[in-house]
Length: 308
Ligand SMILES: Nc1nc2c(ncn2[C@@H]2O[C@H](COP(=O)(O)OP(=O)(O)OP(=O)(O)O)[C@@H](O)[C@H]2O)c(=O)[nH]1
Ligand SMILES: [Mg+2]
Image (tube, rainbow, N blue to C red):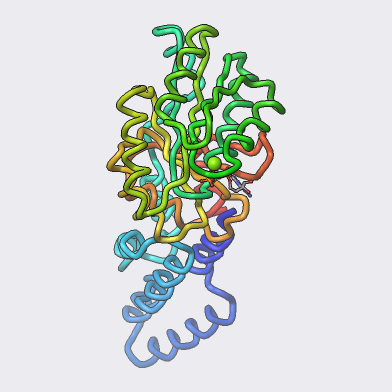
């Protein structure tokens, strides 16, 4: 996780030995010619060439162009010895967020009104159904009654997929027929959740950029069922398209995000771009295919990983 981003940052912080030797040699020549003052200028500050290279590498690590520029701007004319500290500040600032403690939130909602509805949506294959299963498992561990709503009535086998997870986890699932109205599925799941004082985890069909009807369907689910939290699930491997997805789903509105597949994401830059694009909190990172592979988002831990 974040290996590529980490290497990029490390390259800027620690110059390779040969390069350092070369710089010192060049500096000595300058010193002889033009005196000590010039040498200090040359050696201490991070060079324009290094910054440009750093920017390109950030972009290669899936950091968006705007964010890469912003980072480099803040490093310009700074002394090399301060770079690590400055970068730490930039990264922490980019990743900071208003936390939502999901378990606490759900428990409070159930106390208030007898149930809680969490609606999950996102692009095709981003990991919605898998993430719902992981969160279902988490809720059970917290002794919160759970019901799945099989709201993907669009894709063949989607109902079976969530039913299989439900069976493995011992969770109830409310389902209708294929082609049925997802808003009605979530409504029925809510009725069931009220009888058990539990939480509805509502699955939905994957969306493509061009799926106007599916976006309308999503709006209808929201209108009819008024979910307590709308959660956008994003695949961290997506690259710059991820920003477009945030924009699209922003039209439905979301309260939090989950970024999946960070375990197979060597680059790691998308997380910075996402944070810059939206001020909604990242609730969890998906770190694998097992139920336990769900990590709470922790900005300090991530920055430490990149800079250590
Ligand atoms: N490595 C890894 N794989 C994941 C993670 N989350 C989901 N996947 C895999 O990604 C694939 C798609 O996951 P789904 O949960 O079916 O995605 P979806 O968004 O429900 O897909 P659609 O219903 O087709 O829109 C599956 O093979 C999952 O096992 C993760 O955090 N890490
Ligand atoms: Mg699915």
